[in-house]
Length: 145
Image (cartoon, rainbow, N blue to C red):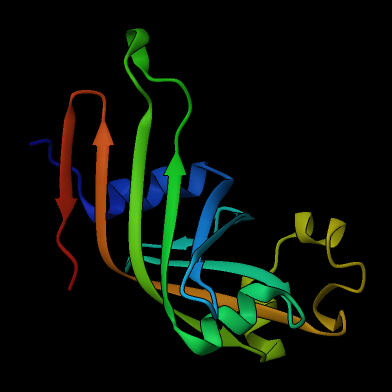
């Protein structure tokens, strides 16, 4: 088993722009969609994503806040597989402009033309409850508080 700290994984997750966010649908199926974390990953195991109120993601989270995140790093060194990170967590929907501003990056202007004033915008905060990684031949689970 390899050893990586929560800080190591947070740094790696911040360098991976897109991940797959998985939710449970009304019918019980798993729905996954690509989401950009814009490098906004906290050392406590939190990830942040912006979406629209009307997105199915929002209604899925309102019904069941348990979510999964799947990250894949760039090509590994010396032909080894890249870093893979699997996060299980609880999602929180935030509709506060102060929180929007705290997590906003200029790159988001492409998707949300009016910035934090874009009508119907929602911030998703995913707090990790379990993080597992595979890094080349190493794998492990990072202890969380």
